[in-house]
Image 1 (tube, one colour):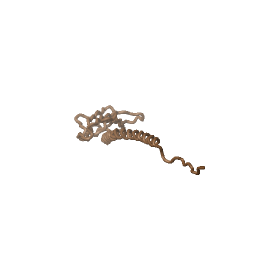
Image 2 (image 1 turned 90 degrees about the vertical axis):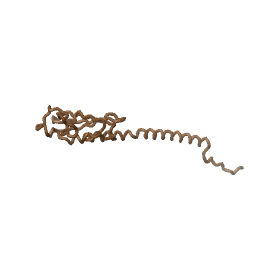
Image 3 (image 1 turned 90 degrees about the horizontal axis):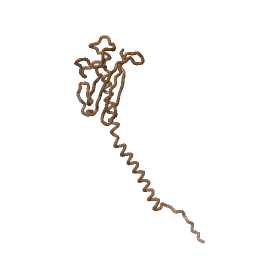
Image 4 (image 1 turned 60 degrees about the vertical axis):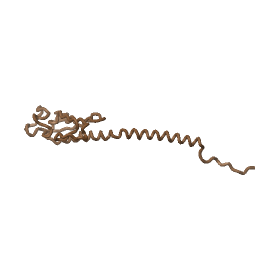
Amino acid sequence: MNNAIKHPQAGVTLVELILSIVVISIALVGIFKVINLTSSTSANPMIQYQAIAIAESYMEEISLQAYCDPILITSCTFGNGVGPDAGEVRAIYNDVDDYNGLTDIGAMDRQGHPIAALSSYTISVTVIEDYGTTGLQEKIITVNVTGPATPNLALTAYAFFN
């Protein structure tokens, strides 16, 4: 009688080792494809943030202006039209509706100097007079920004007559 106890096999076979290498390599290929896709589109959020920053900058500039022209109009009523007054340029705009129709190819500062790093964006502004649903006299300001590989971004705000 053989008193030797048979022990179960410990370790892995060559076939199991090869199969595990194949499975791990397939998983690594998938992970590397995801990393490649992520890194190739990582500049897109930066472009979106730039477009948002440009729109916010223009909107802040416009929102800080008076509702009515402080020089030409003593009583602010609708029907005076929107848009810059004769001879006005952006550096001397003094009310919200002067910005209606403004179109800049490349972002510019208030004095009209181009910002070189943002030359691939196009900015357009519309200002509409409206009584709105509340019956209050208001102007609707919309800043549209388009840029490289970005769809049209529109930022809208309201200016109210106090």
